[in-house]
Every structure is written in C-alpha cells, then in structure tokens.
Image (cartoon, rainbow, N blue to C red; front, top):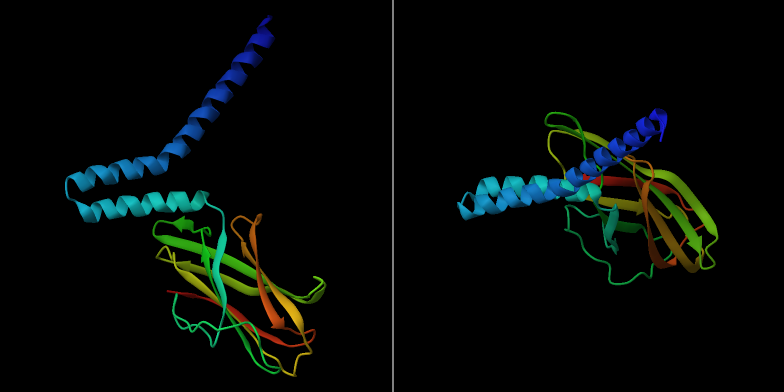
Length: 211
C-alpha cells in the first residue's frame, strides 16, 4: 500500500470513528438525563429530577415522528386543550358549520437563543368525494408561527368550515395535512370522514391555541 492510499485509508477510519462517536453521543443523551434523574430521586430531590426528566423528554420528542392525534368533530369550537364537546356523529345538516379539533405532538421547538424558542406549524385542508377526487383544497389553511419564552408542549388545533350556502348532500372526506416547517420534510396526513361535504363552501379559520 503506497503512502497516498495509506493516508486515504486512515482518513476514512478517522471519519468512521468520529461518526460512530457522534451517533453514540446522541443515542446516550436522553439516557444521561434519565440516569441523573434516577440518582436525584434516590436522594429525594424530586424537583431537580423533574427538570432532568423534562430535558430528556425534549430530546426524545425531537427524535419522534410528528403526530396529529385526537382529531375529532366537535359541537362547537374547543375552548382549551382537551376541553371540547365531542360531536356524537359525523352526520351534518345542510348549512351547518363544521368544527374540528386535534392535538399536535412531537413538533419542533427550535431554540433561537437562551430561553427563547420558535414553533412553526402549517396545515393544508382538502375535501374529497367518496372516490377520493379533490373537490376543494386550501394550502396553509393554518399558518401558526410563534416565538415564546416557554417550550409550549400542549398545542391544540381548531378548524372551522362554514357553509355559506347549503352543501350538496353526499359522502365526503376531510383530509388534513399537518406540517412542521422545522424541518420541511416532516408532515403527517390525517383523514376525517363525514357524510356531508362541499364543492364550493367558504373556509374560515384554522388556528392553534396553547393550553
């Protein structure tokens, strides 16, 4: 093996070692928080243990997939996180307003600087017929971008769709696409099924509220 090949070979080994060490470091970060918390619990320092566990949970959340959970129809707009009147069924009268509720999980909380964080979520809305043909779409139906001094972990999303004129009776689906702008390649699709939809109803307001 000549000198040039030896240098290249040693360089590749160095890159592999550095990469492996970095991966190990990232993999053990959340475990370090847990281990420190366990030691604090043994010393009955529970408040400090909570802080360590919260930091560890933030690391785990950052590695988990974006989720849009508890997506349901409600009788009216939800007023707090988890506080809403669940609609008994998905059958709507013509002219009735659609209220929807959902909870975002594992979205990115980007640290801008010490004790200042940024969250940026978007949501697209589609209305499909029973054959999955797109009858209506609105990208960025929701555009939620905030900076906060707190890591806001409990965000709920409400969507309101108003029938300005009676919708044709039929079997329709609402397709909601929640997107995390940090990073842009992270998105989750959620289906809501209903028995009544529209081709031409106006859409007003999708928004996120903090618990």
